[in-house]
Image (tube, rainbow, N blue to C red; front, side):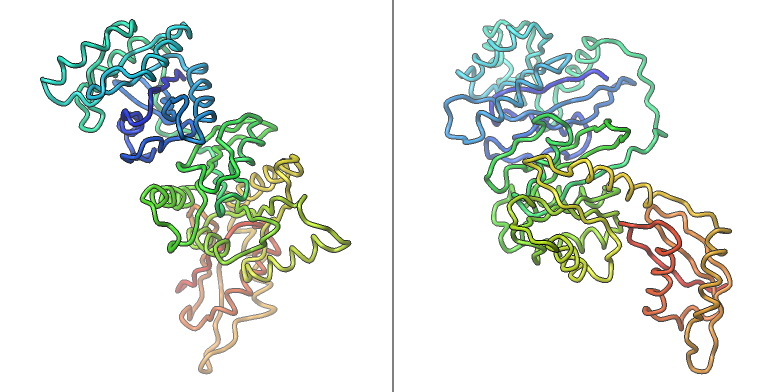
Length: 436
C-alpha cells in the first residue's frame, strides 16, 4: 500500500490533519508544541482508493527539546519510506528557518512533495499563503485541517500522484490479532517493541513518559503475524496532572479495550506494585488474554530458587486468575524476548479457540457427576448440558434446573476443570448458568 508522510516543524497541525485523514482521533492533539514524538501510522480511504498515512513529530534543530535528535531521526525514516511527502507549513507565521531547512531536505530527497499551507480559514489569509511559492516546491494547497477546508482537493491530488494500485477495500479482512504492551512508565515497553521489530521504531529514553500516543506496528516474522501496539505508561490517577498525560492514559486504556492479548510488563526490581495490579484488573475486567513479563531480570541478584519464588509471589497477588504465562526478560540484553512472542501467540490461540459442544460435554459431565453442586434448601441441582457461547473471550453456558442456586465457589470449581481439560492458559473465563 502507498505511504504518505506528513512532515513539518512543530505545531503546524500535522496531527490534526492526520486524524482527519484516518477518520478518528488517533493522534493526540494539543496546543503545546512537540506533542507527537514517534511515527504514527493510519489508513485513509478516498474515492475508492486506500493508502497509508504516517504522522511525524515536529522537525527542529538547536532547540531546547531533549527529544529533538530522536524526533529528527523518526522524521528522516518516514521521509525515506514514503511514496509521497506532504510538507505542512502555517500561514500565520510565514516562512521560518525550520521551514527552509525542511524544504532543503525534501528537495534533496528526490521524492514527490506536496506543500500544504495550513490554517487558511479566510480569504485574507489566502493572499498571505503565496509567499510559500519561494520555497521552490511547486504548487501550494491551502487547507484548514481543523475544519476540513481544502482537504478534498488535497486528497484528490494525493490519489492522482500516488502509484495506481488495484486496491479492493474488503470489509471482511482476516482478523489480525492485536497485542498491546502495557505497564507503568519506564518498565521497557518501547524497548521491547524495538527489540521485537529489530529496528528503532519508537523513541526510547530513561525519562518516564517518553511515549505519548499508542503506536501500532505490523509484525510478520518467525511465523507470527499481528499488530503490536506500544502504549504510554499508566500512572495513578492522582499523579496525572497534565492534560497531555491524561490523553496518553486514555489512549492506553482504549488500546487495552481493543486488544486481544495484553503483555503486562513489570519491573523486576520493584515487583508487582499496586499500580501493576490496577492495570491487571483493567485487563481482566475487559476480558483480554494476558502475558506477564518481568523485565530487567539481569539487575536482580539470583540464588537457586529466585525465579520460582518470584513466580509464586506474583501468582499469590494475581489470585484467583493464576493460569497465565510469566516470562522473565532482559530486553536490553535481548534475553527471552522471543519467548514473549511465542507466549502471546499461544494465549491468542487459546483465546480464539472454539471448543466443540460434544467435547465439552464428554469432558465436563463426568466431572459434574463426580462432584455435583451442593443442594440448597433441600433442592438438588442437575446440570444437563454445556456449550461455548459465540463471544470473543471464552464464555460457557451451563444449562441446569435451578441456576439461581449455584454459587461462586462451584463456578470456580467448574472453571478449574475447564482449564484442566482444555488449554485456556492466559484467558479469563466467563461461566453462565442458564435455565434448561
